[in-house]
Length: 489
Image 1 (spheres, rainbow, N blue to C red):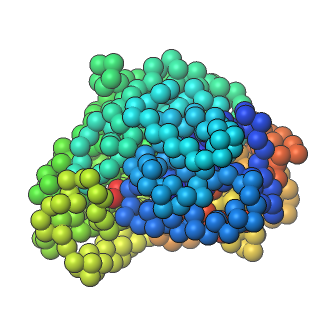
Image 2 (cartoon, one colour):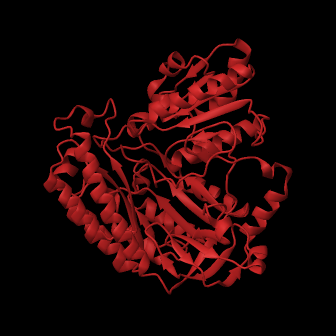
């Protein structure tokens, strides 16, 4: 299973894995050639097509050498390109879209029996994905979808055309899933939606999201609640109050800015302005002084002037984001922005992008440096630090979602498991992480750690998980973190 893109895609891949296992398939060992390779694609960035077709090309000789191998392509790019995929890569066996991921096992079997490619793209959601079997990649942290689709019409974004209009789950169904994953060992849940805080619009309750956050606070055994990604338009005071007043809702907010210029925001059809965005940040920090705020920013939107860009830099300086996912604007066919006047030269966009990155790196490092000397409780993760083995460290996330690498002695390393909680003192700050090298000050072993230990004692523990980035057959390279929510164009 190879996944591109946002957390929604990652969670969809968990469902695809669950469907295949439910149909009798097993994970291929890392050193084996798989019988089935599934690409779950993203169409948000301009190079998504090239990445997919390049990787399909690399797989062709592998499939030629293994005639029984099947290749399936799903997700947003499949929804967009449809039959184009089998035209350009006729060795692909199955193409399915965002609305019918539940069809994958049947389509694979049909392709095998009929010995021809099966392309099935539904135009609307057939069944809410959360009703499908799920093979969760983590036992201690779980994704829970509360809605799919988006009702916004941002001029740069292709997601509404591929994911459809927003469809909301009923609160009872969501809470039942939250309780189920907690019963299975999870102590952290992230609520997912393309526009997560618009939740309730389908059934007419404007405070449904804040009520859901408060209800999550009553789930016994659930220690950390997060959500991604909200839209500033729908960010209301009742949500801020629910975040501040619900102890297990973490002091963290990822809220896309996209641009600091009111003129560009208007052209993007983003229904807020700079003052509105900064006002939300101010209210969040007033209610939760320790909150970390992160964002998404697009550089080089059509018609963006140097003055517009300067406004973005000003907001970055004032908002003091803990980190920002920064993107150079890229055309997406079918979006209004793709045909707008004022498309900027690549060299102009690149130069502005580098200035933005430089500023945000400085701000992130300054914000992180303020935490040096403080104690934080870290949820120990599985494999977040690429150099942890060499440096005798473990890694995990603080309540505000900052990544912390912390040193361990032999005794502590033998006790701590992914899913356990460690209290550490921060000794060093970098733009993208914190380091705690003064030793672990307290350990809290959890039922999540027990669940991780039990699962890794099972025979299937050696099977690879859902991975992000460039697909390949064999052992994957280490991969970077994924942006919260759907990444912008």
